[in-house]
Image (spheres, rainbow, N blue to C red):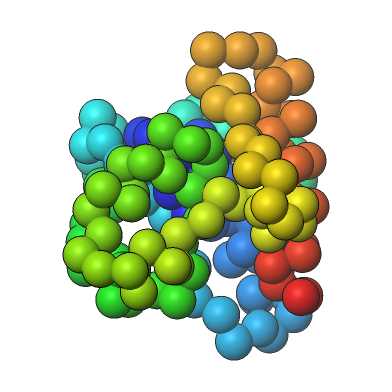
Length: 145
C-alpha cells in the first residue's frame, strides 16, 4: 500500500488489511510505504490514528518508510492511492514484470476505472472518515476476492 508520505492513506490500508488478516486467519502479507521520505520513521497522522481507532483498528505501532525498489521483489501486488503515486512507483520499476505488479488501489474493486483515493491530509474529520470507508471496502474486496 503506497501513498505520498505514508502517514494517512497507506498506513490506514495496511492497518485495515492487518485486522482482516488476523480476524480471518488469511495467508497474506501487507506493508505500506510512501513515495517520499518526508515522514520517515514517523507514526501515522494523529487524525488517521483517531479515525481508525473509532473502527477498532490500531495504527499506533506503524511507522512511515519510503518505497524502495526492493519492494518490487518482496510483494506480488503494489497498490497505490493516486495517479501521482502510480507514476512515482512505476518510475522505479526495473522491468515490465515490476510494472505489472503496480495498480491503483481502487482498481481492485472498480476495475479499469482508475479512481483515486483522495488525500484527507488538508481536510477535516469527515474526509478521514470518507477515506476510511472507501479503503475499508476495497480492502475487504482484496482480502476475500
